[in-house]
Image (cartoon, rainbow, N blue to C red; front, side):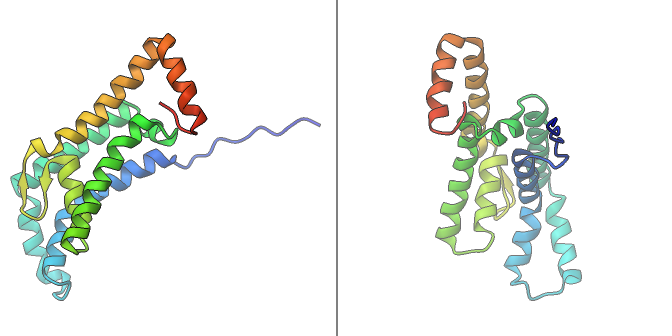
Length: 176
């Protein structure tokens, strides 16, 4: 009997799902922060004006612009979602760094939005708590992310070294 062909799944892979969720956290960090500061007690209609004023501020727009540009650039040019789905060390490292910074802030502040505040600040430069934008806050994250892409490209360009590193990492169940 002939074997059946496997059908390709139309569902997005883990890397693409993660990037979409990350963009959602980054874009919704300010509204979530505003609602938490009001104690979730006021009606959404009463909170709309406060949220709208902050959402359309220049710092928020800069942070949202960085988040969208990074998502588009990393998915189209860097193939970051594919690398995340392959469990690439160089793709996962910046995401672990950002999550660790968010977790550290969340534990320190004991706030629901503590994680998303610091995660957004580290990945975009926008700080939802203070509604300020500082690009220097995102430099370590982008250094890891785009540096990892350079390492992946260099490993493919120099197979004599890259193949050995890839073979070593594959024993640990990860890729470069």
